[in-house]
Length: 439
Image (cartoon, rainbow, N blue to C red; front, side, top):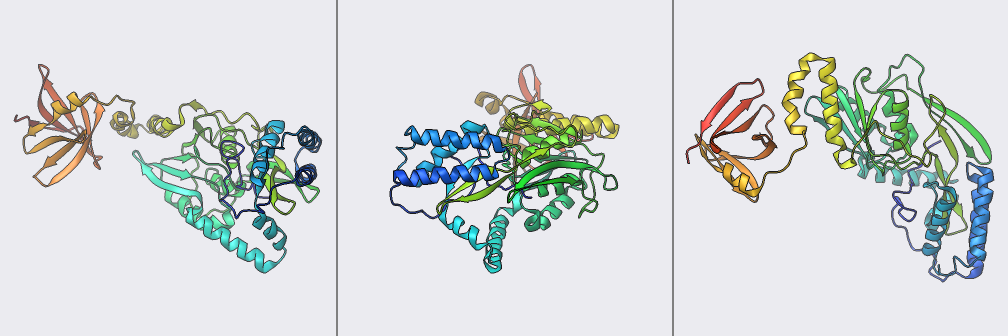
């Protein structure tokens, strides 16, 4: 069972799927709305993970209809928005959504035709390829910390090669950071594949346990660490997961499970709180219902985070989470490997919070030094030597200046009697070289 990526982002009216062709533009009649609400209620009762609650919610929608609350919705999109709002209000489940997509409804029925199903699958593959199957960024941060930016969890049947390449890319990192701050979920099977790299493969370890409704029958499944992978495992290496208020569904499960198993440190903000797997079902000829069809449970105490979200180990603003996690990673590596302490100390000024110097302070630094000069242009310090090489300097605080693109040395402003008298180059190994100020 696949945890569909058709998820609500921030509000009931914000949907992840692309705009669709307009449905029948004829105004909705009272009979149309009643038929829609009745069909929606039936679909809800047949598929919602909590049958008793489904009956109550369906009854609420019918009462709202009788009370005239949908009278102002003269077109299908407006009705879909109001029904979505009411479904979420009645259930407190952000997975619910009603949408208008007559083409999808037609395709849903046509999927019984193998040729049509294959064509739709190919369309899905092309769309995923344009988003690189969710892998928005892969790089190594200072200190040999691997970084993975994931926008969503793609179907691994489509995105396996991309996932394998990403897993191989990070396998030589001393630590890894998964950035899920803006990840709205997707396929739990992709989360299973990526998480498996963090555990040994010769020991049974469950990651997710869940059940769901499938055509009127209950299906129970568990997902475990995979025994074979396309890359080396990262067992024993520190793992950090960045979270934000827009981390949703499968992204939350990835973070929640790794936290429960003691395999990752979470950094950022509390997540949205959408724990249920979902599916999309047709309603009539124009509408569809995105409905939670099951319940996932963690492998430790069989709990979840529905409506509550996942609380990070380190609560920081999501915008600052990457820097905070990077600092934590370097500190953890330094504690376990004394040889890495010097590197952590060297990088500390780069990652430390700092105030930007004033324009007057920058202007005071600009000037000529032995064999080089510093200019102030556009509010930035430009370092030039040999009259042809130029790089930007970034103030690090404490009179330290980082050099654009350079990791092995930095500069320090030397002052005497309150006046800048020299520019000191500080190499990573601690050696220094001083350039006297000439003006």
